[in-house]
Length: 408
Image (cartoon, rainbow, N blue to C red; front, side, top):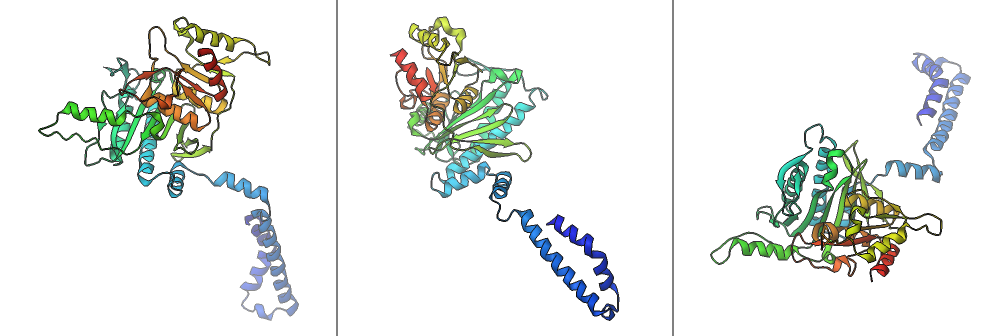
């Protein structure tokens, strides 16, 4: 449109201005006045045709290009669409939005951690006996604050909290949110991949600590534990946020897996991966083979099998990031298998069932994969305590089934 108008202006503007600006323009000969009208009419028509071409009228390819360039769907719009479709309610929409806000704040801190002195140890130890990093503590506080302020969360359970936290009655809702605020925090100081993991359980009896003459704080805490300790099959939503070269918020509400990448130019999570489906097979395995001598013989035979050249003459590739979020993200896109098995020193494995293994297993199953502890489906295991650990093998369905034939 701009180009067409400019062409018309260049060819006719001087002449038309001369005619219109003259006080006695009607005194010009009739053939000149007719020439003026004919010239203007023909050029405007040509300009309209050129404008239609420039706008891509009738051009399917141009329309598609325009849609792919400008029709951006962010997380907020996607959540509202899911609410309109009846897949989630308004309260769950608010909870998920508050989690995404916490993830944006954590991503910002991670990017500046070395500059603002947020690297290194905090000097405290969590309930699992692990040294806490500065960002472990800060990220936990960010998650808790966002979940409290949204007014839709009743109970919060975190890797960094000794017991589940009951949200004050003034701000309390019904949803139970479990999370690991920083997964792979050992990678923070060297700027490698980290992430956050979360799971959301449905409304239950609100766990409000209201002490009266007939109850004690310990009894109220036990009510919290009972409400939180649900099998992963009860999850309403789960996801993770990957902090790496991109910040990727991956989510499932029980209708497939979707990933949103943070656009730093306007601070929005933009839909970049729809209906992720994990490949049935993969050529990548991820185990911490530093523990090889501590594993049982069946598992060793399986790993020896993976190292043998396959039909293409190549063995599986070994990759290990040291961050569950990074391992699962790669696996969702490329396939393969991840394992954190029990060993002689850790009889129950190293990962926590409630807020690490269950949410990730939910995501992978929604994408068509499988997750097991070697004997049963991870999502069928009901935790007996908040920080309970479990072995886990998770990934492409055919790869997990192959593993199970070795472990049987």
